[in-house]
Image 1: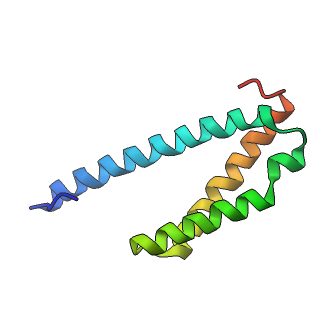
Image 2: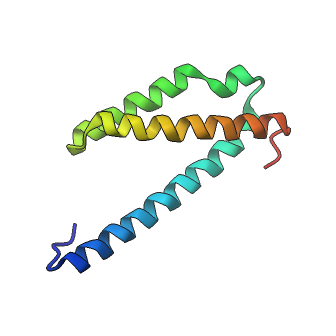
Length: 97
């Protein structure tokens, strides 16, 4: 982490992180689209056990890093819900992304 000397500098650093976050979410989404070709049913796509595992991992990491785990869980829930819908669409399309 860089020690900032002004609000402007701090905002530039936050903007860089925001850009990286969006890039990482896009990368994750690309992998999720690929996952559809390895699934055999919509139930496989929905995979509540996997979702629970991802959520637990995210909460654990948040706690380790001193970030509110409830906030991280909320963010992941939104992200996962949307990506499951994307994966279902890919599955119905034969996994051709």
